[in-house]
Length: 430
Image (cartoon, rainbow, N blue to C red; front, side, top):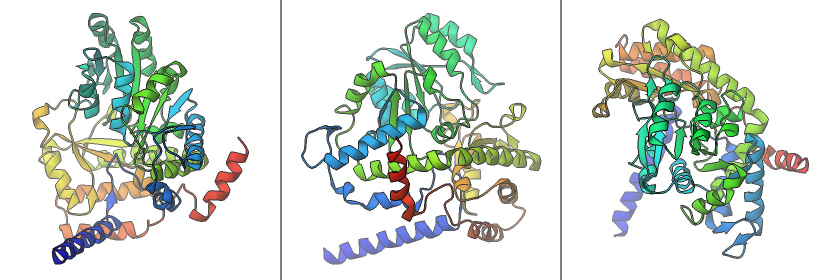
């Protein structure tokens, strides 16, 4: 048994080493990922990761949580400051966990919720397959305007008067343009419904004041903290004050017990980084997305949203049907170390999930490592050459490695040595 275990451990070590080497030589364009700073990573490896803290601040079920209470209280206060929220719960350990809690807080089994279809950008957790289904919610998809690439407000109002949903779910997984949150809020008020906004993809852009702010117009805002928000993998729930007890109960004991305290501490540092550097980072992220979209379009790609300026977020969507579909294109790009994902587009049927029309590109991580508009043009050319086989894959892969060598530092972040000083100075001032 010992020999078998040693062989398995060798396999594990090689996989870890290969993974790090691969990403060190790759252009990361997955829209749902980001890179954390060394300062944030410092807190993954603390004694917090060995401890348990069931319950709420000041009301734990175990002893030894006094200092953990301070960390969680700071996380809550920083979150409320960043997003001007009436209430914040920082315990969910993933975006889907946060969404499950939100559905439990806002709806009963059998209630109707409106959400975007998956091809139109809706996340799977907004549907019966995941969080909404766990709560027993009946999901009806919003009417969608293909020209505007957004929710059709007038048709939604007509449908809402007929179906009387209890929850309007906004936010998306494929997310180029802001949703009509204020307009949906007005409809919701007419029929005594709630607005739930999943800000997972755009949380960092909201924190950096580069995307519309859904908090004033939403009853509950959920979000993971590791996409445009460059923190650890966990989540938050923001809400109106009158919903705070329902939200907190839905989170604990509803969907979490202990809530991964090492990443909670890391989240505190990422909040501070966004307070210090978030505006510059978010602004450059949107600039980069627009620059990449324009460069891809100029080269001949069918970039979605041309009439609207392609994008107002960190994402770019491209219809690659003419090149064999999203699956073929994503795999071809992976072979040259450009990492992105295939994606359904609004006109796709769910039967096309395995090989949809589109690819989805996110620029938040390459922005975080210092790339700007010039590098977006280089990335577009790499993609064009790879997909059209203008050069050998080996040649293009070497070009990608050479480009990436210039970008090895995480920007818009603290040095590890600065963390305690910055935190102390900031917290002394609030």
